[in-house]
Length: 123
Image 1: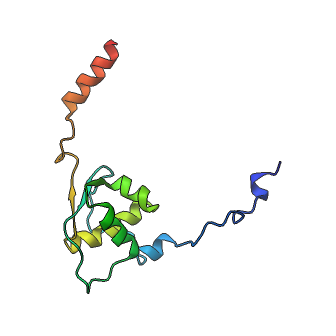
Image 2: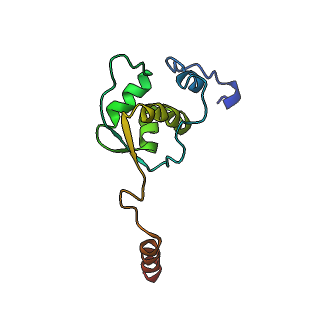
């Protein structure tokens, strides 16, 4: 049995490696702050032909034809959430997607959650 430090990290071909800063063009903050992990993203319209988008942005638009949570988009794109937020900011600027906050989509309030906790404790 070999120690993990002796293993070759490239034994299994990982395929093409694209660094996150390449996907975002070196940008780290997103254009729009406050998009939460459970915020729902929906595609509003298709991009104009002259609008240059990253391949990941095209994938994001395709994924969000029906509302999808930001964290789910990041998982499906196999990208860090911070990268998806930057890409999402570009799409929001161009009015290609909309973001619904959790409270706007019917997230339970604190009283409801407390009632659930109290009910579970009684069990």
